[in-house]
View (cartoon, rainbow, N blue to C red):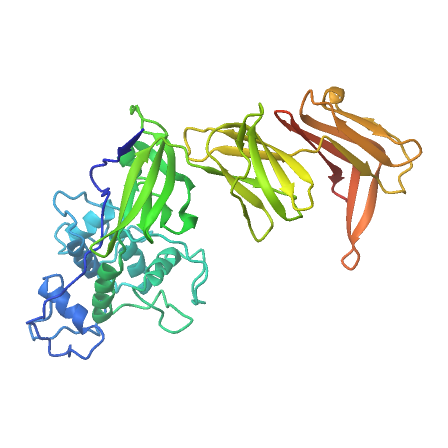
Length: 481
């Protein structure tokens, strides 16, 4: 069953960023010639009554902009409702303050905050790092994580780093030098105008899904095929008492993808704790448009086959009961020689891989449906009902089997007078069997660094899917003190 998602409030399902056009300004500030890099932004914002000049006809672009002024400007630009605001309780912002309503409204929305001592500092010059955080939160910019950046004066534990990198990724601003951002440097009025205008232009078309839109207490991304490149999806974690969790979905190119979300239903709400979407990205009038379609469909899911070291001629697929599905399944081989193909339905299957040498390898496959996700839980094992484990020659002791039900899982024997162990799955039960030696063994693995390993025996893992059984043997390693 499919239905188009209808969420009211902040979520817009089909959104595209219109081309921005600005009328030529009739204003002229004596200290802002058109040749200045911030002139166009200053005049545009002035025409829209978002910023203003001084009575003497100047704009004073080199003056610093205060935290209160920044709050008032951004509140206007984002059309923030400043009526009936809740007093944030800052020591230095009374209700008579000209910036009170903007500061209070932005604080209530979690767009801005004060200092740890209870002050807001409305007259303090705003710093570059502070401005980045306010812009990201107020304009709801995508929180794309950036790991490679040139700024040596940013660290992961700085409070504004994530937001600085978010505006840097969108091209809203650059550093003060090629390797520094200077988060503690103050911003001038001219710089602020240019940055805010650039923010309006740079914000991509985006869908934001809040936890409350789904009647949840929180929301997380559970599954996504964003790696296919059609869209990006980001988690934004809320701050208790101010903001809530949300998911940002940004279109990248035309196509279709899958996005699964999970959360905790709010108290008293009778809703599922998951939602599954198709993500549709199309172009409308040359602009990317993203639409979410809620669905209960399951998507074709990749099965991965390992340990194939020869070229493949064909792969055939049948049900575990022997019903043929295909004699020639389309498959891919990646750079790591992992073979993959898609399964369309839940169940147990046998895949027979025919190699160019004529040899055949069989795999047991199980695809289980999980209603909360779009892809099946898939497991694949290579048919290998027997195995041989050869211990080092220096071991002369005996062995014992630890598990009491080991005989139900595998038959384990030792060739007389040797350290060769033979393992055969019984087919009755899957599980793990530990074979313990009389004493532990050690060997040097890294000669130069004197690395060593120690083991007390070996472990047999028996896995079974339908009639296909796999035996895997490994050393039972322990720390060498």
